[in-house]
Image 1 (tube, rainbow, N blue to C red):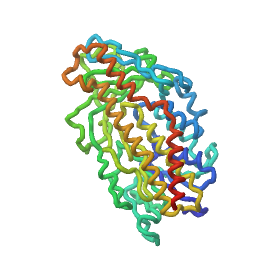
Image 2 (image 1 turned 90 degrees about the vertical axis):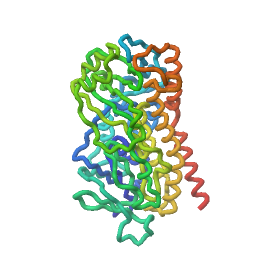
Image 3 (image 1 turned 30 degrees about the horizontal axis):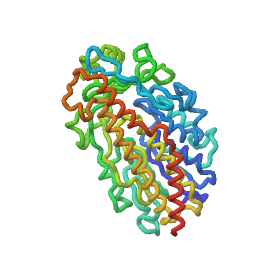
Image 4 (image 1 turned 180 degrees about the vertical axis):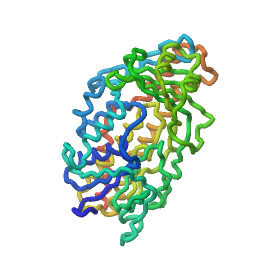
Length: 450
């Protein structure tokens, strides 16, 4: 407990999801019961990587936590539920490619540069000097790499019920009440959760490899203008869409290597590749796509990684959210949104506890059980759907086993495949408020049985 009686929460990882949790907790903590210490291993906050898709479901959360006015001017269209094209799907792994169908969804998708999204969250971070209303005081600690944690040695409480001590590289240790882990999968933590728990959650959630993705952003020069485009080919595909008001074109090209699927990834993260290496994977593809590739001066390659599905995201005083809990492949554009939902549900549960702080262990156990009950099945379903989406785009669904790169495929067969992809996105306009309501009801039920 802090000196003023507030519960101390440590958020490890100041990426999109970690920042979202801090902003959400501040928005919901009207009784000012919490104080946050956010730890980031990097010396400064900088976001690299692809743009972010904000679906109507995620937008409802962002509005609820007060982000609407900041984010809305950065999108390419006004957030609403008007039916819009998400992307044009093309069969592209042949010299004469062709449009298959426009994939449309209610509300379409709001696209934003990842760095713009991060800057928007930072504007709402409740740190000293911020213009936002501060309920939950947050202190940001840069250059803090967490290497271990464990029960606080001086605590008289039982091993799993007392405060948590955090240990950093070349930094003083810190004592907190709750530890929330949100590391990026491309910088995975190596320490397991059994330091405080009987279950080794992280060791069972091994980082596995599926293939490679190359990413680049190029100035908008006319090619690929307008709506997003999904270029489809056998075991390869690329998504292209404008961001930053059309000033940039975001390109993510994926090459699946099924021989690597399920293998544990031990290598490094992102790496620059030459144009020739990038082009070699897409020789023979349609000229429209080749023209886009020629605009890329320095592509970046990273391995497509995901976690094996975990049975639990939390136990005791340690809670996983975002990539730490359910890192997934990017083919549904859902990873950041699912992490924001974790933050939404967790902040709702934490701020619905009216007891004195820090919370007694029995209350924490009920809160953790509800979080696991609500989040694990839903996030796992998103992760599985993302895997399937990649198979659809790479023409690897049932019925496509004998099709090779460049083969002619009837349009109606491709249309039926994309209908599966469309159905796989049925969740985009669902209401996250129903999950929050269920979590609150389960928490109330647990209290009634005390």
